Image (tube, rainbow, N blue to C red):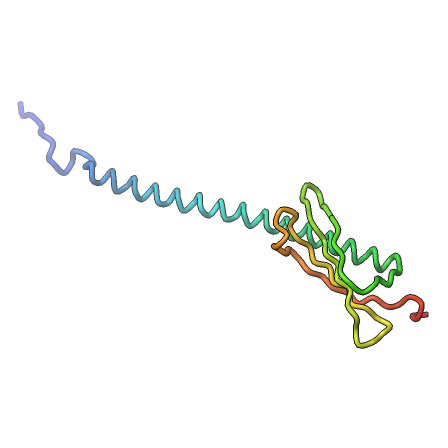
Length: 131
């Protein structure tokens, strides 16, 4: 009987081939984790911006509905939304028309007061002269 010897080509993968395959798989997994991390961070940023927009819109709607004619100047106040601690800064400016004022509301991250999330503005008429 003839004994069958396996040729060197049919014995399987070499250690070098396995290591190269592991490097390729590891690189692909690392890139996937980085992409998922980026998506998570982006989602958190969008949520913060949406909540900040709600805070600014709430203040501007309060001015409109209360028919306020705010005094010129700046003021800061807390305007939390959900679990976010936000700080709103209201800046009231004059306009060329003395019957109107420009109100700008900037919303900052409560943990980092240097990072502005959103800024909204509206023109407010003097309710005494608008009649």
